[in-house]
Length: 188
Image 1 (cartoon, helix red, strand yellow):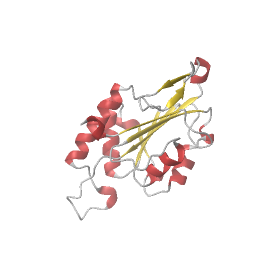
Image 2: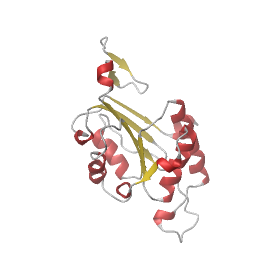
Image 3: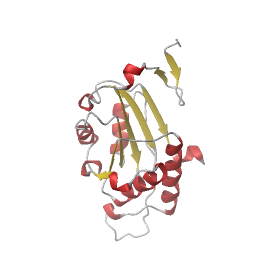
């Protein structure tokens, strides 16, 4: 490894960027909703709440992200209740107003290609975008964008990717410079 590389926490080599590069760094954080409850079989899929374990793990990952300085410029959530409650729990832990979380239909029951198309429309002034969604689409998108194999994003799993790009519309045209992948079991 040369002087311009360092090892990230997950041992993925990442280039050290100069201050001029930092304005071109875009961060995408994909968060799978926490564990949902099946206690009420009459509820529609979109109305399923978080389970007790899900609420606990969402709060845990919120604390973990807070300690890492999690501060997205834009935050989107699937309109499904379990995703929104996950976003709210994480937002509370990192000091974000839940009123700033935008509900986005393309994060619920849509393909990873549709999710990618949505992300490519982001305002280029947003350097950090977070999305709370569902599997299998979230894992598919992470696999498609990440430079390493992510076979499954578990409930309340977090995949954070950093890209050198000035415009969101080119997302997916190059590999990320760093990828971190974390989930609740890493902290139990």
